[in-house]
Image 1 (tube, rainbow, N blue to C red):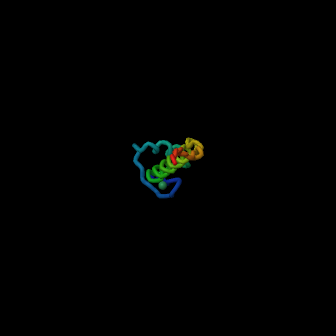
Image 2 (image 1 turned 90 degrees about the vertical axis):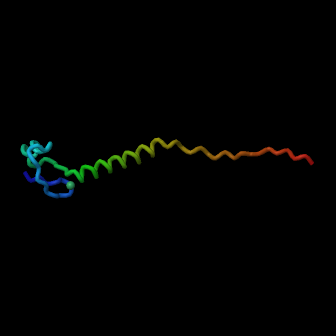
Image 3 (image 1 turned 180 degrees about the vertical axis):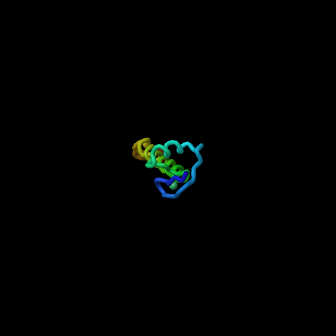
Length: 75
Ligand SMILES: [Zn+2]
């Protein structure tokens, strides 16, 4: 059965053993996403998640404390 990727539009022939076969058979409008696009989406989600995490986990930078060295000079 021919199935069209919902993202890139590439047509793929899937076997009855394919996990999405039954879903597509019942519903021709089933949003099928090909392996390539599925991986791409997962990657984008992970990237967005990483950005979100790093922006929320970063504590506010403390002001740099000047280290004053007290040197006693005998004169
Ligand atoms: Zn695709």
